[in-house]
Image (cartoon, rainbow, N blue to C red):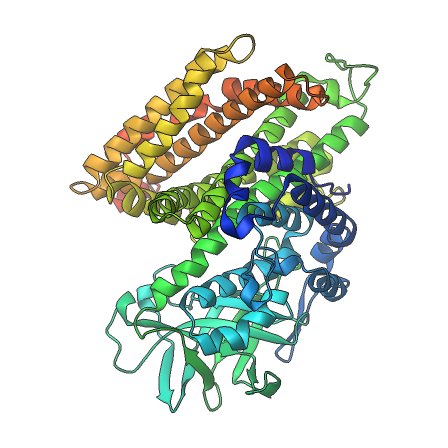
Length: 598
């Protein structure tokens, strides 16, 4: 099954669902137009469909190989990466002063969806490079930016993020890697694990961003600093110098993403790896969070992407497989697409992907306002929205995306459980998205602590208030739209109640709110997705009333919204008891009681 990017739905979200004119009125985006958006999406669709997608299954089957510290990517990856760089895809949203194209993050997110959907293992390399660009652009010195950003932005060099150590998974306070001052640089020693694309054969240099401690650093996260550690040192004229003291000592054998090398990196086994301090000592974790937020949003996009890829394959199989007597017919279909439960699964996958797309792009739209609006207050409000949405996008889209890839296997029946069809690969690849860049619980803890309790729910209240306008518009609508108002209102009521519980309970009873954090995040995801689907239906109805020639497309948007409201939006209310129940029963048993009686 080939991948075909859903460019029409992407254009709908980018230019119709949100205020596209507000983006084009930003000084940095004055040359952005609907025609430009359409052209970029169409060309990206061709590249990802024709170049990357055909390598997805073969890359999974072949995997990466490690020998003597060197990693070889699957056949075709290196050539495809060369085409990726030559076509300029890596530079879309990057600053123009260092060679980027300066296009909106919202448009770049749509392209990122295509990259991840067509070949997630391949796209993981550029994903980490984008995070490195963001971190250095925000926190690096002028000299560091001039040295590293131009090549990272083109993609000629790649970037990594080195946080995790064998004894320190998500608990970065336990980081032990050391950085010893040595003239104008530092010498690093230590080991990092789970480093995505830490070593490969696609670029001439790899720029590692590494967390380590200086000799006098205090314990805990306040003692962590961030360092640039290039695979090859860079000479003053920009040419590559000698090989640095950093090696890949092994790669992991994993459930999925076999085409993406996950590396164990050793720093300073000989004389010490040369590293350059980014910003100030002790600020490493704060700087790294810039990179992590960039990556977390893109991982959320991965949840959407892999779900849409699985949907496309499931739909193809359902229209090809003939078995039983179909009960639903639109024409002369004889395949299992005519079975009502197959339709239910396909509609769940289709509408789930559409809701995730809307929410993911909503976060990227807010990024554009936060980074480029001339008014400081507008930037601040948009950044609050970005901060609120990122853990929801990362957590909800990956959990929901994993569920939808499982449905893709189910549509295939027994043929989905074997590797021949490729449906199983999507399921295997999807699982990592709920884990790396912070597990779902880490996103949920961020949502209850930094994003709800810290401002006493102000950012969440602002989001709900915006969605209430959509609810009211539904109440005043006629026909198929009006029945969506009630389930949306109930979901928004549940979200308000949950946010109030977190805001008032977290300070005194954190054990309760942490036990409720994932249900709270999932509630927020389903409610926000439902509101955006309702908004999509309202926009579609307006387009049809205006006599659009694309009536079938807009009618499908209304049907998708109705299905979501009936079948998926009620899940939001289902999570509310788990939030309000807190930790009373979750934490009630002792460890001995958790064990089976013998």
